[in-house]
Length: 139
Image 1 (cartoon, rainbow, N blue to C red):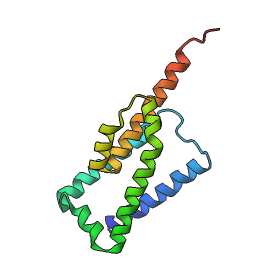
Image 2 (image 1 turned 90 degrees about the vertical axis):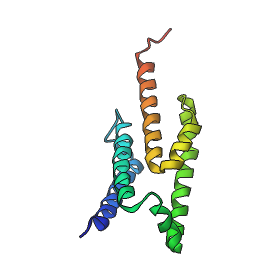
Image 3 (image 1 turned 135 degrees about the vertical axis):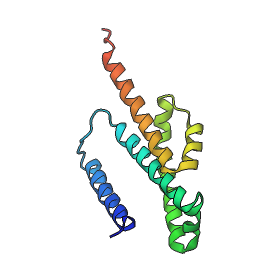
Image 4 (image 1 turned 135 degrees about the horizontal axis):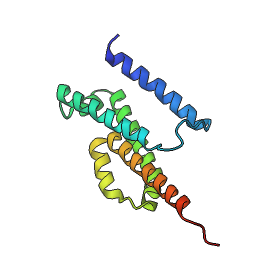
């Protein structure tokens, strides 16, 4: 078996595990939840740099315009990021994040930037909650 066969299968299993945990409210990371998307963003960036170095900067476009399946995958990726964007931007604004720089980052890097944005949002949310708990309540 090659890495091109193993990696998608491992990613699919991890996806099923993670989404199942979310669906059944199984929380294996209560604190420092922001670390998971940060690590995934860094790993995906490293993998993408390797792919760009070996296949070229615009190899993704060749794959997306080659067949109707490539078109379908491209549309699926755009829809997924747009849905995520719709759900994340209101929360990110609440925590002082400016959407426009993040949008440029996401457009240029796809899920690498989106994972980084989600990581930053979770970090800000966690720190905000920690600060709220540390403040004495007034009676």
